[in-house]
Image (cartoon, rainbow, N blue to C red; front, side):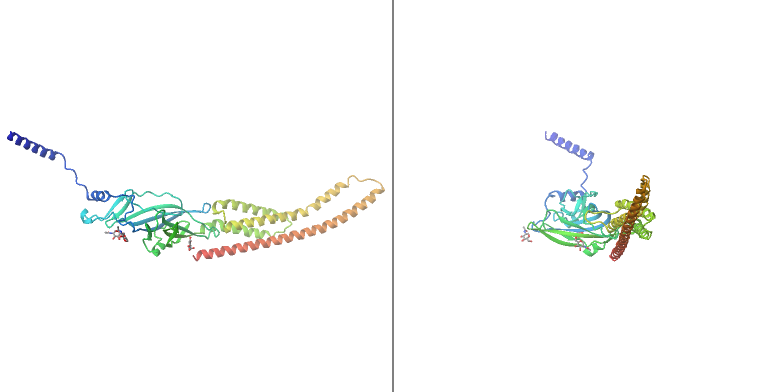
Length: 411
Ligand SMILES: *[C@@H]1O[C@H](CO)[C@@H](O)[C@H](O)[C@H]1NC(C)=O
Ligand SMILES: *[C@@H]1O[C@H](CO)[C@@H](O)[C@H](O)[C@H]1NC(C)=O
Ligand SMILES: *[C@@H]1O[C@H](CO)[C@@H](O)[C@H](O)[C@H]1NC(C)=O
């Protein structure tokens, strides 16, 4: 019995040895896999990663402006694309590289670990940002979360100086919920380095980046302090396109309009000329409404000036018309008086009536002539006034434009 038992055991041993030869050995986990499992085994991604809850997590942030995509005066918003980086220390993601094949840095799924809720407080639209599913962690627990973002920001835009305008839009990063005792913010690089960083900026578009000054401050709200970091994006427009396409044509139109004041006011030529200029203004304004950034509160100088000169032009046409039609009725009156002569009574009364009507007509003509002279004087005075007003507005416009240009170029 003992022998048979021994032989059975031997058989089983042999069989199991045979089996283990056939079934390939389970592959050992890679060091990367093992490290990830070790780190995330007891990790709770909903808990702020500090050992002592009284210590704050400091999130260092960094920003590189890549391009200005759109500046919209109507909705008072600006669309920019930035490269955003945030770095913080996770006290639970610490390991000894010696134990794990010398691995010093690994990437982890960003869903698996705690991420601070730092957002831009001026956003009006999340925009389109490609999702980056990973963060980078090194052995001392420093987590790097880099992502490109396209954000639509609310920004109060100043369009008065268009096309010589500069804009100042702020981009404020803050934790939406956590007070400064839990999440504090800091700048990763020095403020000067961020302000002058134009390496990645696409500098061929309409907007030129001046600088991005930044500062840290805390806001007191509901008995708690919140940390903020504000970046002011300072940009200025490149005006060449608008100078060629809008300013030069409008100045040309205004000069032609000035010349038209030297045409004789009582001729029909001037009216025709003025009307064609008015047409020119109209076409110009219709063209411009698409290009001019309009805001509800303030319009740009060009828009304002064009509207003003349009009004003056219309008024001067009106005064011309008055001139013109004041000269016309005398002719019509003659025709009327001719037709009155057709039914004349015969006899001696005729002579008397004729005399009386002659006297009446004479006195009427005299008073009409004096009235006409008054009217003409008034018209020419109005014309003179409009001309001066026109010149004044034009000079003011040119002066303001030059000033704006000067202040633009010395930014
Ligand atoms: C947490 O930190 C505070 C101050 O740094 C210290 O007074 C407190 O004892 C710490 N608590 C624990 C549980 O270590
Ligand atoms: C981890 O990264 C931080 C920040 O980049 C750095 O200061 C630290 O020295 C790194 N630690 C190791 C062990 O490389
Ligand atoms: C930009 O605006 C901020 C306030 O929003 C202001 O503090 C800052 O001085 C402005 N910068 C310039 C250059 O005007």
